[in-house]
Amino acid sequence: MKLVEKKWWWSLVSLGIVSLGILMGVGRMANGKSAMNMGIDFVGGTSMVLKLDTLDALQREGTISKQTMDQKTTQLISNVRNILQSVGFSHTQIQLTDDLELVIKTSQHSSVQNHQIRDALAKELGPIEVIEVDYIGPSIGHELRNTSLLLVILVSAGLMGYITLRFEFAYGVGALASTLHDAILTLALASIFYIEIDTAFVAALLTILGYSINDTIVIFDRIRENLSKVNTRLINLNTVVNQSIIETFGRTINTVVTVLIVLLALLLFGGNTIQSFCLTLLLGTLVGTYSSICVASPAMIMAYRRPIKSEVS
Image (cartoon, rainbow, N blue to C red; front, side, top):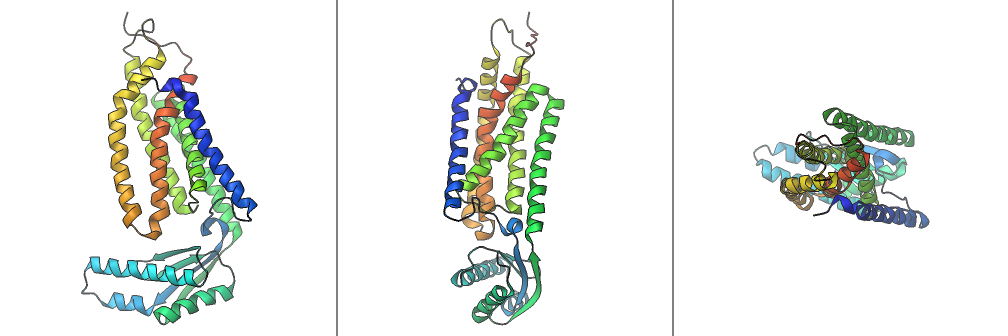
């Protein structure tokens, strides 16, 4: 099976996905919208911590089971989301703390709109106590964007350094190419599916990079092992790499299927709060698996300039 020889076909696939993501972003900008679905953490907004009588009632019901409590709190969050959407606040983040305090983040900035939210909730759910109201300014969002970008760069550099020390420079180049590919392609898919870009997305992206490099290391380790056994007069580097990928293919498929089953379950039954996070992880897992096979190894071959030393005479 010739996999690394088709590197230009894999490049076209990746380029096509990235191009589609860019085109969809440009199309949104042409319609007066944001190119990416930037979350409140990045664009700024208001964070409110509220105490509801409904939540106090749940807290007093100490005799109910944890499962029943989870069902009631999930239903409450769903009701709050529906109430906010009914009054025009569709871009919100809703969380419930361990103290059963309701945390609502919106992209709205004015006190009038904050009162509108409180009035809508009080009308449907009863009296509300405002614990805290914080304003997230655009400067904080800008700083968070820079910090997130720096994190991705540092992780990429760290992974390349580790692979270079663990193997050699050509393998580090392959790992860096795969890592950057994963980050860019995940962002393109976020544009295509209009996934919200927030701190949870950054956490998912870093998780994806770690997962992908783990799969890449397994393949690289098999390549190095097989290279130590070959005679270059009888076999070339492409053949060794293809054989190594095939030998680790079963492990790769078993791992990705196991991860996807868990992520699909979370995506379908985990609720709206973690939906974007799970979708990002699911898409990123597929991207990471694809890049480990179709990006990392071809990039390693292109950087491999030292003649293969044979242990076979």
